[in-house]
Length: 355
Image (tube, rainbow, N blue to C red; front, side, top):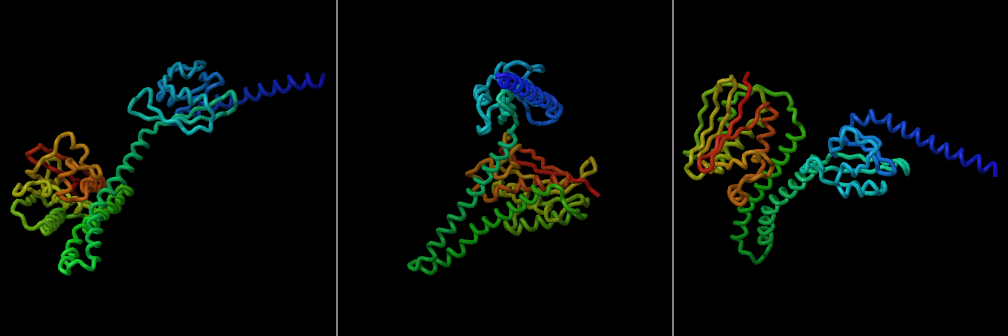
């Protein structure tokens, strides 16, 4: 009996000692949690707050001194308060921030022992936005490829039909080039855009005589669409810049083609290269086309964004041109600027440092 009575207090004292050491270690960790971007909340067995960091206070709206008070007194999120009562085998909990309604938080629960729980809170708003963008991107690519693939499939099914007239088969072979070219353009633009996004810092740049580059791009577009009286070029600057020839050429071709695509027949499109008052040089494309409503201007450089989805399909293009322009210009320390009025036309321009 004496032996048992001695062991009882000894075990109890050891347990209390271990818990005290643990709490001391957790307090020591408070210094490190302050530099973490994630929120950290340490709760006791009564779900009262024993420790927290500034990130948690900011994300959850906790007061400066919440120690010793229940978490649910400050955070009125039923799902979170239920979550912290559970075990560490639960899936992470996503919930709307009680501070910013347009932000999404994720909570993870860790049980240190039966008396101590650690809740890690992370802001996953940006991550969710990126996942949504990726899903949208995949859906858009699938949609853009589905139409020409369906056309090609239909043509091929007719061509292998032995009962189909020979002249019909020959005409379908000629018609195949359009959907195939569209798919090829889409894949090329996707590859270029991926390369630009994954390598924001450009390689060594060359000296570019923009007057010649713009003229070449102008001639190429004319060759693709046929000579048009409404397409003009006006270059008054001999300025040179540092850049990557192929990328700058894609900027010029995309902006000129885009202006022609959305301008009604006969509407003037003017391409220019001129000096600015602040010592830079400006490439500009001005059209008298359909114009762009103000609410769309901030989004036109997004991948596959179209002001009028139905109308844009009849006009062609991959939906990636302006996204490519944005990333190329960023690599050249420039940016795309747009001025537009519905029914009056648009002005797309970008300024470059000269050498």
